Length: 375
Image (tube, rainbow, N blue to C red; front, side, top):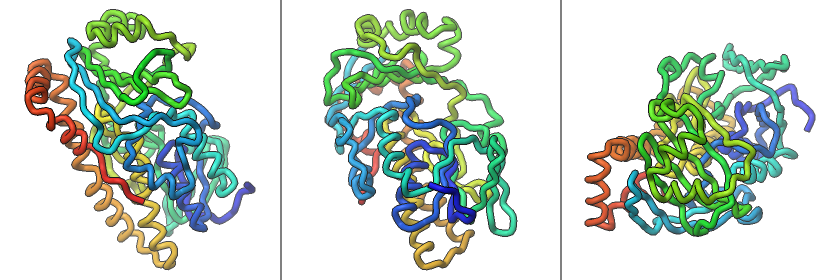
C-alpha cells in the first residue's frame, strides 16, 4: 500500500498487540501505519500458548487460529524442581500456536488494509498536538496518535527514558522447537532451580520449549547446553525431555534483561500495548492473550472517540490507563506472587503440598491470571 502523507495513528511494533490493534483500527476506517523492524514470518521468544479468553475477539476481526492448525489445549500440569506434579483442567482452555504462524496470520490480514513499513523507529516527538516519528532509514512520519507496541525491552524504552530501563533485570529467556511426543491437549510448566520451563505443542506438531532463568543460576554454566544438562535436568521431566527431544532450530533463540517491573500504560502521550505496558511472568502462561486483550481495550476506546470525531487527548489517556489497570493489575500482582513462591524452595514445597490437599486451589490461581471471553 502506498504511503499516505496524513495518518490517524502510527503503531510502533508489529508483535501481537501492534498487529491486532492495527487490524482492528484499519477495519474501522482509521488510516493506520504500522512500523516493524523484522519482516514476517519469524520466530520469537514466547510461550506460544493463548487463552481462549481472546478467541471470540480474534474471530470478530476475521482471524481464526485453527485455520493454520492451532492445537486445542484444555489441561495444565505443573511440577516442582524435583518433579512432583500437580494437574488441573484449564477453566477456559486455550490453544497452542507459534508466533511464526499467528503473527503472520495477522499480518496477511492487515497488509492490504494499512500501510506497513519494515524499519526501526529511532525518535518520536510530540509537538502542537501531533507526533513526528523518525526511523533508521530516515523516514519521517506524522500522525495524530502513536501506539507503542515494541515489546519487552526496546531502544524506544531508552529513548523515552522509562524508569525500568535504569535497573538491570536478573532474567533471561531461551526458546526452541523440538520433535517430541507430548500430549496435545496439555500445557506443562516444569520448575528448576532458578527458573521454570513451559512445554506445549504448536500448529506444526512441534513442541515449543521456552524457559525463564535467573542470570545468577545460568552464569555458573555459561552456555545453554551445559545449563540444560546440569541444572534443568535435575527435574526428571525436563531431563527426559531434553534427552529425548530432537531440536528443530539450528540453535535456540534467547533474550536477556527481561523486566517484570511496573511500566506506564501511557508515556509521553504514547499509548502502550502488550509487553510495552506490563509483562506477566511466563509461568502464568497468558502473556499472548494479554497483549491481544490490551489491543482490544485501546481500539474500542479509541474508535468510540474517532467515530464521533471528538478527541480529548487527556481524557483518552486517563481512560486507557484506568481500563488497563482495571483489567491487568490484579493479574500482574498474582503473577508476581506466584513467581515469588515458586522461586523460594520452602514456599514452593508448602504451596505444592497445599495444592495437593486442596485441588481447587490451582484452577482458582489460573483464573486469577486470566480474563473472561469478550467479543
